[in-house]
Amino acid sequence: GFTGNPNDRKGCKPALRNQCTQDSQCAEADTCRLDSSSGALSCQPACDMLNCGPQAVCVANNHVAQCQCPPGLFTGDPNTSGCQAVPCVYNTDCPSHQLCNRLSHTCLDVCEEDTCGANAVCIAEDHKSVCQCPSGFKPNPLPDIECVLTEVCNPNPCHPTALCEPTPSVGHTCRCPPNHVGDPFTEGCRPEGDC
Image (cartoon, rainbow, N blue to C red; front, side, top):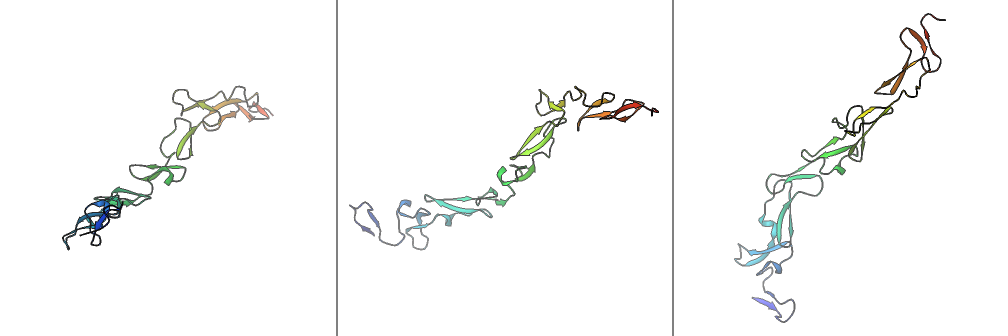
């Protein structure tokens, strides 16, 4: 049951439609196997013999069928338990201030946890946390994400009669000494009771 020219590059082919003797005689998505109804070898879709898990798809390549999760935001075992839609697979699936937790496949805020050290401010940039020191602070040389106060009161930014005190939030504050009143920034401080 073959037709064709044995001297031709294409060679001989089975005379019956879809009949085959090897996979290479079939389309790439088919495989050569025994047809239960005719009892002869024939080209049959490779995916017909494969049962994929829920939401998985069968892909045939080079006569071999394989289960895969659909492209995009799916993960799981395509062969048994199947594929599940998830919010993210890669960081780029999340907004730039978040990253993808590869275990839970959820987007998390990069600054949500205590990412930065003492007195440092977390800024989200391109799916990463960047720790910066606020005004009046400088990076601590040991853990470079922790900030320590700089010499914000040297030189004294307050009025000469006022006291300068370093503070974590704004860098420094000016206040009048005990038992003194007035404007510690520009006008100056004077003893209580003086007019």
